[in-house]
Image 1 (cartoon, chains in turn yellow, brown):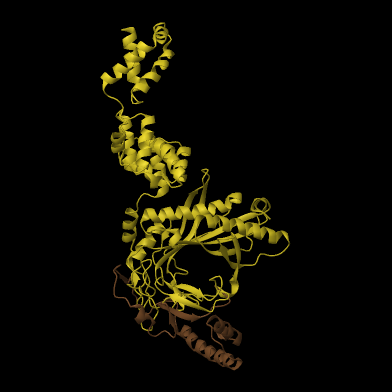
Image 2 (image 1 turned 90 degrees about the vertical axis):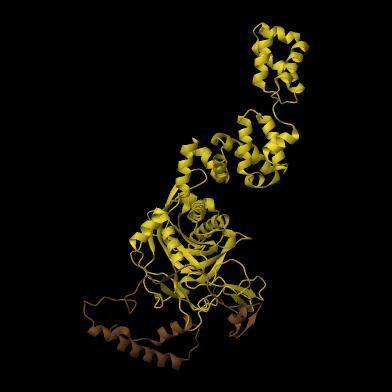
Length: 493
Length: 101
């Protein structure tokens, strides 16, 4: 069954767990550097490896970042919380448990406002945000696919073991209907933007800084109890999240339509096919036997510290969007187009560099986007905000008109230099020399006596017939307004 | 913990499975008995605890033990792998993992 049909028959409910790797200098519980790359097993300490006798100590920065995230999501920050051991036996966790938080997360009950591309808004209820550590990285060797089945053995690199994570868990998200897949992707995108604005993570999806587990279930109607869910693990791009949700909704609808039951299980998403396949059964492996981590004492964030962090929170993306929409006088639609095109920051920087907002928007979404599109790159890779600001300044000063400015921009895009340099090098500046303009006007008047008669007779639109020869004589650099003034002065004067 | 805290061989088998430990029927039965005895003894603590003693996760009243976010000494990969039963490409080599991911 196709997604489109599935969502007419069933009411989808989604739930999303997002893990974000924090951009601290060191790991969560030891002083090994938290860096991407480096030789295998080089960024580790005895604690990263869980060697006997090693003891964890909590990274204050990791806690601060977790509180920042919690506050940005509108959560309550716990008066007191604890770490817990999540026990499972798998070679990527060297201690045989992951240090996490269970019944006492640092942040709980918040919400995230999510906007879809067409402006439709959804409020995503956040259940909790808790601190934990990342696992090491397994490479399966010998299997044809690099996945587990058929592997002869596995190689483990613990550089990532102990990297600070915050996991954000939603309540079941209802009421999204046919937009379920879009909402899932937009939610994770919104979180990514928030992490970046907060400065708590580089939040690069392609490096796995942000990873999502997507829960999907279907029910007969919005009034029915929640159906059995599946959890698709480690979906790592916005597009994959949308595809995984679409696939699961369609698959589960097919199962239910056949009178069968959805199996509660973990599933894996495959980028190449867009399908999910069965992983392990949930019931059996989810017996994590959480208990309080005896090696870490309770965390009691003082209310002063929390207030201080709250005070230091930067403007969040949604607030910023609202402020700029008002400041710039754009419509919601104009603003959405800018955001969807990934041009908000570029336009903001262009305005900061002195350009009027309307002009910045016009050039970025117009000619710059067109040129970038031809080259199949993003507009921000083509020119800089400073260059666009310079271009609008030359326009405002009357040194360029729109047509000439486009030529200048083409030169800038071709790497010929900044707008002023290109204008000078290509000789594109509007002729300021009134002598040259006057000569061109005189010539045009002398060469077109019939047109001049019409203008004398009051047919003002006939002026246009003189503009062609004037522009030709000045190689298009005449200021049309000034030329018009001169023509009228000469004919009527 | 009360008298119903007796551990069954099935529970031990479940734990053993989660812990990836192979155990014989005899071992399961013996350990079930042993664990039950331990739990019963620990449960006796409840008999002497009054309502005025709050449950705690840690024996000493200490909180907020934090360290600054500063890089310290690390192991080299040679040191890290020195005690590993097997290694390859500067990584720990472990037996194939089946049945779950």
